[in-house]
Every structure is written in structure tokens, then in C-alpha cells.
Image 1 (tube, helix red, strand yellow):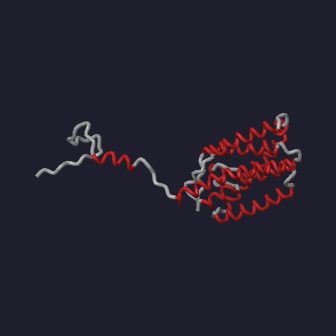
Image 2 (cartoon, one colour):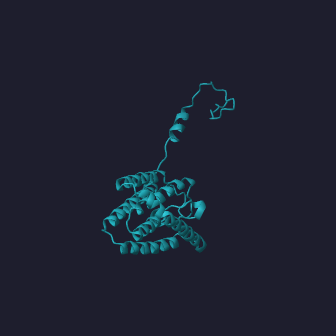
Length: 225
């Protein structure tokens, strides 16, 4: 008694079926592979990840306008920087970052900050002929580019997976911080806002610092736990 041969999805073998033969289960297999099933446990943390970044950008914009109008005093910004540094230290401990890695991040943070501070007077002179509306429009457009190009896909919560495309949002954030801080008449206000901005939302590439030395990404890792 001959057994009925079963059609297989193998193109390089002669299966003794017509050339236009379609098995009944073929379309069912395609339908099963056509979609992915997501649970709320997967979607909610990643959604909070994006909302956290966008809300922080909006918050820093609000801080800029409040400082420019004199609503927020300089001492409040300095206190916020100190509190943020304490929060950052606690989050780095919770994320189990080694001391050598932390020192390397702090060193890189200081290098970038001092470099920006060195060229800030030159950039402020170059930007001074522009009107406030032009500067604000430029900062808004660059912020949109930062949000769109930001890589929100952290493949592992406890590791430093940041991709090379993060160079684009990094440059955008540095440009935003310099452009906005250059509009302050007081150099102390500009320096304080620059520190606060870089502390909260600055992303560094993983190949440069190993981990991100800023408050926002450390909060993201806690959200994704």
C-alpha cells in the first residue's frame, strides 16, 4: 500500500507535484507569520520611555522661558542641579554601575561641558544678531529632529546598548543647549541652564563613555525594569 506523499515547502527537491500546486496549509502558514502579538507589559514601558523623553524636552523649554522672564531665580536652578546630581548618584547605584565606569563618565561629562563653556561666548556673539523668534524656531525644529531620531530601543535594561545613530540626537541636544543658553543676558544663568540641560537630557554614545551619564536615561532604565 502506497503512502500519500506530503508536500513540503522546499523548492530545490522534486516532490512529484504540479508546478502550480498550492497546499491547503500554505496560506495558513503565511497568515500565522504575518503579525506579531504584543502584550500590555511590553507596550507600556516602551511608551513611558518615549513620553519621558518628550516631557523632559518640554520641561526644559518651560524652564528656559521661566528663567528668561525672571520667574525662576538662579538659586532655584542651582538647587535643582544639586538635587539632580544626588538623584543621578542614587540611580547609578541602583543600576549597578562600577566606580571606574562612573569616573570615566564624569570625566567625559566635564570635558564636554568645559568645551561648550569655552566656545559659548563665541557662539553667543554669532547668534546675537538673530531675533528671539528665530532662535526659538531653530530650537523647536532641532528638538523635533532629536525626538524623531532618538533610539528608544534599549535591548537590555542592565546593559549599555546605545547605537551609533545616537550621535544625531546628541548633536541636536548640544546645539539646543548652546542656542538657548546664549540668549541669557547673565552668564551665570547661561552656565546654570547649560548644566541643568546637559544633566537631564544629554545622551552620550556607548562607544565613547560605555554608559549614559545623564539623569533621563538612568530613569528610563528604571522604567524598563
